[in-house]
Structures are given as C-alpha cells and as structure tokens.
Image 1 (cartoon, rainbow, N blue to C red):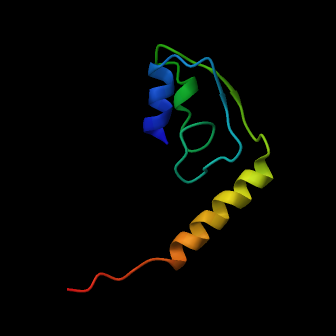
Image 2 (image 1 turned 60 degrees about the vertical axis):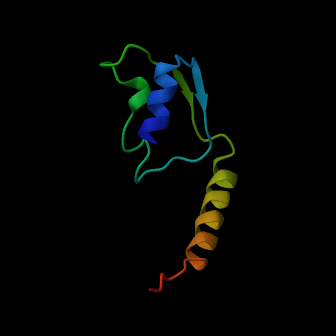
Image 3 (image 1 turned 45 degrees about the vertical axis):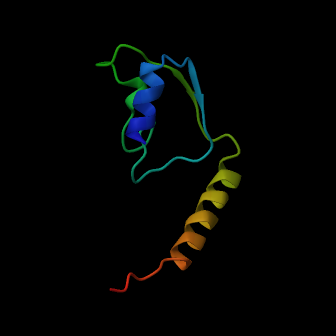
Length: 75
C-alpha cells in the first residue's frame, strides 16, 4: 500500500522482496511506484514475484473466506 511503501522509503530500506502484486491498489511496480519515485529522497532495489503463484493463491483464498464471513448490521 502507499503508506507502507512510504514507510519503507522513510526508513531507507535498501531492498524490498515480495511475492504478489496488487494491481488495483499497489504502491510498488503496479498502480503506483512509490519506492522508485525520483521526487523522493530514497529509492530501493525491488525483487518481485518471489513464489508469486503461491502468494497470489494465499491472498485470493484469504479474501474469498473474508467475503463469506461478512455480517449484516442490525439495529
């Protein structure tokens, strides 16, 4: 997310490694690219797609289950 990516930049992290991109709201090499933005004072190396298929499957399963558990608020 943009806030997490901003924290990585402000923390001057040298390298980010992740598995599954978020093309709808991601902040690294997807919707935004915060960690490589030349307007900011720090950039980092990015390694993407590490065990990407597995990570993507885990994320999809998590949100599928979460949607099933939605509750209705009753007054």
